[in-house]
Length: 73
Image 1 (cartoon, rainbow, N blue to C red):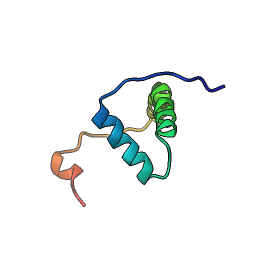
Image 2: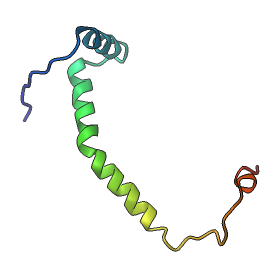
Image 3: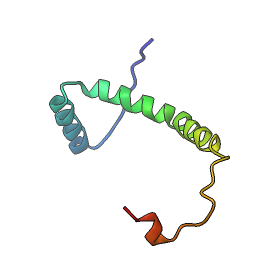
């Protein structure tokens, strides 16, 4: 269920956000909903990344690489 809320922001920022929404063929309301989902899911994304990195605990390069070795092509 969608709920209405009231926000306040600088008029200039609101206008720039409306312009951006227009260029992206969407609404300011929809952009806000997308942003809110990103904020809410940010911790989840970080936890997923941490879990992925922890799953590679068995991977080891066997030595510490020098700067030149890491930048070799």
